[in-house]
Length: 478
Ligand SMILES: C[S@@+](CC[C@H](N)C(=O)[O-])C[C@H]1O[C@@H](n2cnc3c(N)ncnc32)[C@H](O)[C@@H]1O
Image (cartoon, rainbow, N blue to C red):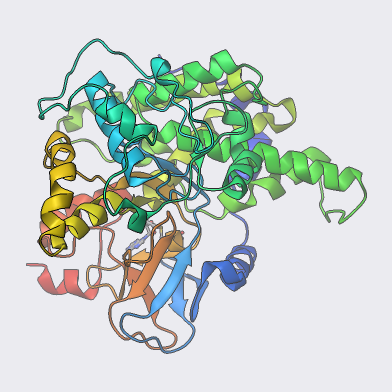
């Protein structure tokens, strides 16, 4: 039987007010204002509605091939839980942090311990000004010893604590790891600014440390564990809920101070909540369990049951989140309808978050050194390379919602693409023109690999809930 969410029944009007998309003119105004903010580096584009496909991005001037169109800052993003073992990045901007030695040492150390994604792999102190290691807390030491060539005992620790430095690693310097001010020992940052920004935007509610502002740290740990064991998209949904609650509280303080009174109608708390919810309200969304594509191993006769199971999973996650960060004034945010639509929005819009690893650059640099420098350096670096194995450098991988990039519609012969250049070493989305684009033309990207055949592309686009009818698809249709 379907689980019943009492908040959906009790606050049906508030929930539907939150889920009703704002009028197109308001959406365009909000998004075009984002384009104007200088930090986004937008060039010659704007968002407007197109009757059939909802909103889209259009060229506002003639654009050249390879021109940078947009560097979009994420609204919310996360590094996949499994990837946290592979690399240490800033929990806010996703830049690599620490040092080449720390990146390599930490990865080998966790590999040796056999730490898996669902275990806590981040509970070590990497802060630059603290010499003392805190390695004892780091995961299980029971099993899963790597099949790669292990290093002599103590070497990985020497790398991690800075006793051992690798040749030429100073050419690949990274910002020192700043620990979370809340004391969770899980989040690290590239700067105090990123730590503060994350704290203020969502982490103060989602931190499991002593300074956490959640209502129950124990419940929060259970919520995080459940997400790590099932689907880490729940962690992203929690960020969206937490950031809305924190925005609501800030708006309330501003209003009570009498500054900048909001011109709002209806009950004050709903009006404030709608304002706080605005960044999410403009995203295209459907319920997660309605829009998620049926996995290939699920028979179509089992579709209803599959969708029901997804709904139940979301319900379990929501109950855990509610125990951890519930706020009576923001109660509608804890309805299953809202939770399902937030995750559905990620399903339909998110872009993979990828940041290249400086560890790869480091080993390539050593490989390119002239002899005898190369030989000397390799004598020291080779054992580490061998211990790391073929996948010696792994990029940061995650998922993020980008407010402007998510307005770009799909084409199987797109005129733009998401493409990280050499200098793009953080979690922002970079969109580049791949053809000249004329003023007024729609800017499109491909949601799937364009080199696939029509049927393969169509199968993948089912995830986004539409059948592509771009000129290429029409032409290729038998
Ligand atoms: C990332 S959003 C793109 C922006 C969207 N049009 C909006 O209004 O927010 C993806 C959704 O846009 C629609 N869409 C994008 N490209 C499309 C296309 N080529 N044909 C039909 N629908 C498309 C689909 O509903 C898809 O799930």
